[in-house]
Length: 113
Image (cartoon, rainbow, N blue to C red; front, side):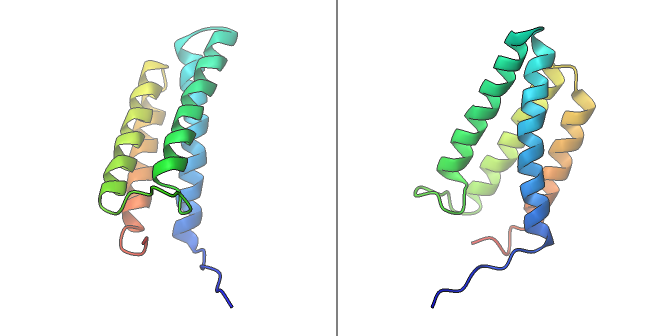
């Protein structure tokens, strides 16, 4: 019989940060270009992040990076999201997101296999 992994508060906060990253990328794309092209750019940026995350950082990824390389890649992705947010006129949102997401994932570093 297999046991289900327990999901704690840190895991939920980390998942919320992942969703916030996608929303911020869509908003940043919309801020960079007006009209439907901005929404398209934002969705494209979010899809690129989803593709990278699912290949290298998802718990079920076949080629999941080991820690600490995974944590470094996550921080770089958060910083890149913050830069895109700044380019889209959402600098403070980007800075706040990068700080909170980095702290959330750093707190999981010792418990995340």
